[in-house]
Amino acid sequence: MKAPGPDFVLVDVRGPASFSEGHVQGTINIPHGKITESRMAAFPKDTLFVVYCNGPHCNGANKAAVRLARQGRPVKMMIGGVTGWVDDGFTLVTSVERVPDRAS
Image (cartoon, rainbow, N blue to C red; front, side):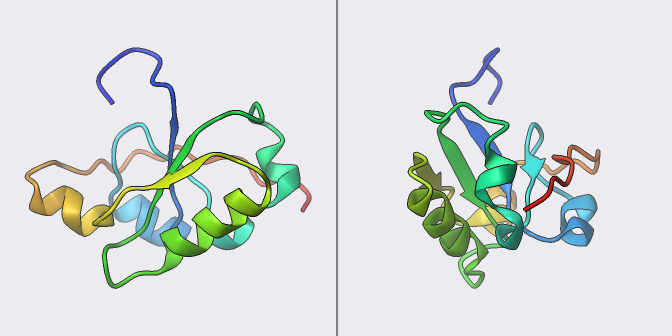
């Protein structure tokens, strides 16, 4: 994440309220239910997406990964989500970095 120009896009798939309360720096917010082909068309087809949600008790990352995989997109899940990130001693930020809504 600290390297210039990472070779993946980190996506927080929680809702906007949770995202604004704290997320991993450099993350974009696309709630899992809004991961549509038209929205993802803004990214090159070979873009690797790394998705996360609240933590092990949340299935939003699973849902997002399935949606992306069905679109033929490379995808990985950040195991542990926000909970794991914080448990490992990393901090969250509250700046808003959202992908604008587009027609579905």
